Length: 108
Image (cartoon, rainbow, N blue to C red):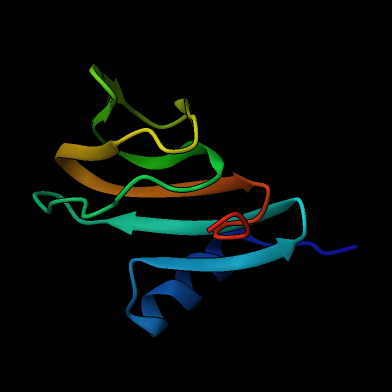
């Protein structure tokens, strides 16, 4: 079994200085922590795997294809593989859990 504490994941991501930190990888699933500061631009490109975002904290908007919605703590967003998407209009630093199925880049 693997177990994680959100406070430890956030502290590790802050210490590493990168926006995304994967912390779990199995053949059919990977999970990471993604952090975007208020006012920044999300540089993502479409992925080769389906993904789900869970908003831990922060506020902003997400565009998935042609749809655009607000995200707040507790929001869940599904993004099918190969669909353009990005977070924008970030008014409070976003902390997101990102679930890829199968594991990120396993179909690249």
